[in-house]
Amino acid sequence: MLLFLKSLFQFFLPSQCYCCGRFLQEGQQGLCPDCLSAICWIAPPFCTRCGIPFVSQEARSHLCGICSEEHRYFTIGRALGHYEGPLREAIHRWKYEGKTYLTPLFGEWMTKAFLTYWEVNFFDLLIPVPLHPQRLRERGFNQALLLVKELSRRTGIPYQKRVLEKRKSTVPQINLSGVEREKGVKGAFRLSEEEAAVSRKVVLLVDDVYTTGATVNECAKVLLAGGAERVDVFTLAHVVLR
Image (tube, rainbow, N blue to C red):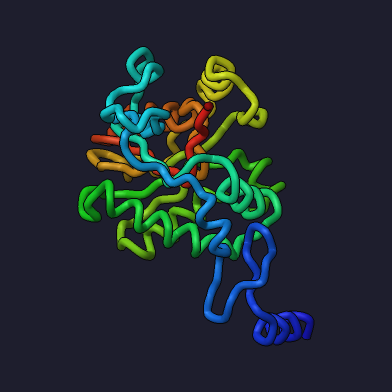
């Protein structure tokens, strides 16, 4: 009964912006025009490896300082936008407040961006960055898996959700330095019994936010060690220090 009443209210009431809560015009869904226009979408010039955008719009795309000094196991990483403003707010509501109804919107955005960087038939497999079982129980869902399912549904690329396992619980990474992150995730991931699934496969590794790249780099290392031919990375947002 409660579910019915909620659906009835949603039918008669106008939709609200997922970020600011402003009522949207008839037919609109997702974010209001003001919030959408405030998102800083990523476009060239950016690092040809990790995809971090450069401040100067005059520069050409090239390796950033970190990628030129540190070994990256993934071939390229790409993201939709800067992890700030309305995009950060929407991700926080989705990830930490359980607003999973944002998933189709994120899936739509990611599919459009995906098609600007890759061909659909380039990848053999989509794989989400896994959560530790304890974190999964606390949150109730793996946000990376939700994104993978959306991408798979929209592109037809198959996915495997149990190839990678997180065997070591780590502290929240967002406030750690790059060195601390690397030390924290070292040895945190392993291949499951389904490791044969990645043999000779070109894999797209998916997560919500790219911060320093330590997590996805460690995952890519494990996948390559398990026989993957190549690993690329795709995220909703990229942390950009100004």
